Length: 95
Length: 175
Image 1 (spheres, helix red, strand yellow):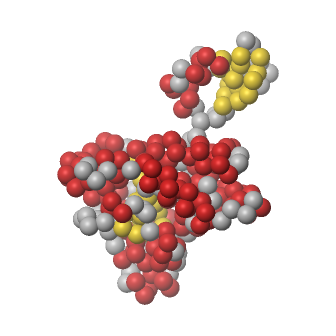
Image 2 (tube, rainbow over the protein chains, first blue to last red; image 1 turned 60 degrees about the horizontal axis):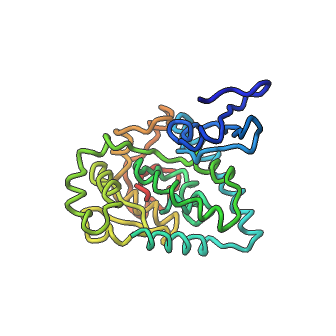
Image 3 (cartoon, helix red, strand yellow; image 1 turned 90 degrees about the horizontal axis):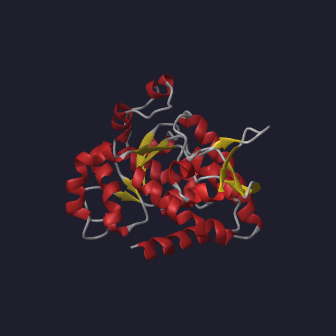
């Protein structure tokens, strides 16, 4: 059961409810997770692309989101090539 | 795995940002992306919210199983013995008749063509346009695109033209 928290717009669920998966973990909005009535964190599912947003708008949003990630990686000295090599290794393990 | 690369700051992100290329994939492949992303997020210490924002905004059309089911038997015959996880994407490629954008060698020597990120965004644009995907992708329709955007689609161009016209639209299927 997903509920709206008092005085807040964020939905809440118990730790046990979240652990059962199902539709709850497919929610696009973040969910405040409660354990014994107390908030212990929030859960946000990795989403699919939001196809309700026009593709050209998404392209602009994606450019901003990916540039933010790129800046963080640049600060850590992680190159595009390193990421792609790690993904290729994952892909190899997957086969 | 080019979608994973795009979502985590790899070279594929530059291709997704190019206005000329419309990328599609399958629900199966999107599930694979989400399954394999957490170790990368952890390894690089990325903020999961940032990666979620990148995923949610990906300019990508996802095809459901029932939209490529018609070509699954043919795809299984060609691919299942190589890698069953590549069957869905091959089925979609066969259905739409457009190239696969993948680093995966399993797609070689099949009825579909494969392009890799390594050749660069401009070259990918040329490859995808040469495949003549514009008209087909437009006929199938991409939810969320404005009518004016659809009407501005150019017919497929020769390779030399494509390099001069980076705003023309074309399509690719991403793993």
